[in-house]
Amino acid sequence: DYYRDDAEALKFVLEFVQTDLSLLKWGDWLTLRDGLRRFLGIQPKGGEQELEQYVSTPQHLRPLQQELEEALRALSKAREALRAEEEVMLEQGSSSEPEQIPVLPFVEAYNPFRSFALQADAKITVGWESRGIRPKLVSRDLRDHIVFSLSLIFLRTDIDKLRECKNCGRLFYAVHGHQIFCSGRCKNQAAFTAFQERKKKEQSGASHASKGSKKEPPSRSKKKESQNKGESSSGRRLL
Image 1 (cartoon, helix red, strand yellow):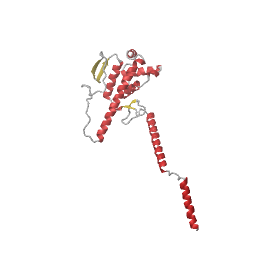
Image 2 (cartoon, one colour):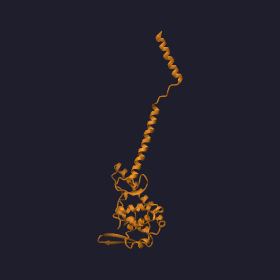
Image 3 (tube, helix red, strand yellow):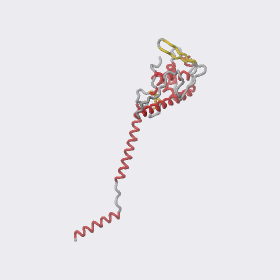
Image 4 (cartoon, helix red, strand yellow):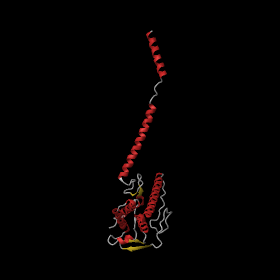
């Protein structure tokens, strides 16, 4: 009874860090605890006591929420800037490829914008099993476990799919590479806003054009003068 894949687990973390814990009812709190249990890989039967050592109250989780959200937003912005830089290089026809960074963390991180230090008594072991290699963290701190598990997920998955919604600013995990909105609702709202702005510009341009094309009505003196000229010329024709 765990999350099916890394994408589902990452979506839970994004939902967790952006949830207002003060608005949670008792049922919502139980759902959140169960989500944390699944993310941490704790067995559903008999795992409540194990989970209790990590999660106590919503107040205990708020500092962790803030730290993780800030780090995830920084990572999203860093990847977005890197993608923009690579697109410019492609448009300019640059043949040089971006510098490759080792996937496995066997060397010191290359220019990290954020580093997480685990608790002093935390221990990491790596088990070589027939089904694969399994790193394991031993710590009594919930922050250690979430940061450790999240880092392993990012090693296995596409970090570029971690994005901020262009409409509401919410963090989300993209389904496809071109997705820039977290939901269909935000996509429709952005399209409607763009339509309204475009309509305003068109109306503003049309009003300026109509004002410029309108001729000023002739003054009364000019009207009188033209009428006198017309009468004198008609009088001459009669004579």
